Amino acid sequence: RLSFDEADSLIKNTLAPHATWDRQMLDDAYQELDQHWAVLMLMPNGPYESVLRDVVDSLEPDAGAGVLASEQQALYDISRALAEAFQANSRTDEAAWRRLSNSIAAVQHAEARVASPSSSLLQ
Image 1 (cartoon, one colour):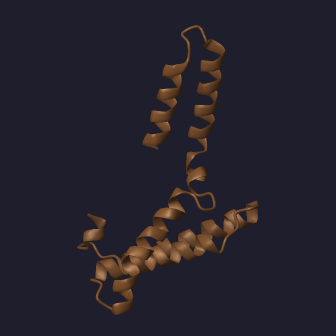
Image 2 (cartoon, rainbow, N blue to C red):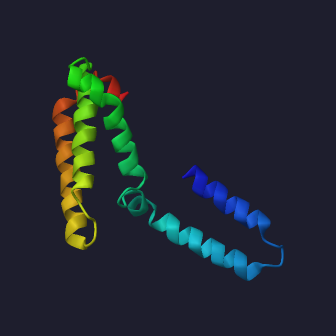
Image 3 (cartoon, rainbow, N blue to C red):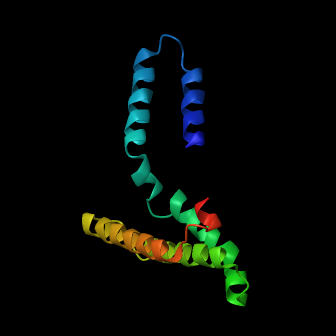
């Protein structure tokens, strides 16, 4: 998000002071993207999916070796389940988005059962 805001500022700074139409178009585009930011982050191979893959990839060797602490194991399990839900979903129509939403909700319910109030993941 920071990169998005920085790019917007950079482009605005390159516009001539009298370029009101260009500035308005840029503002309109910024608002449009801002309104749909959450969906953009969830697009196939988007930032959210990439972060999930990074988490899974970084924890996978230790998970396979069985040496993760319980909180790390929970993070790995949740991240892997979410990454698999994203990978298996094309997100090409409303039904696909609904299935993804259901998958995310199911993982959240599983997370609530795994997490405890003393968990360092919650702090």
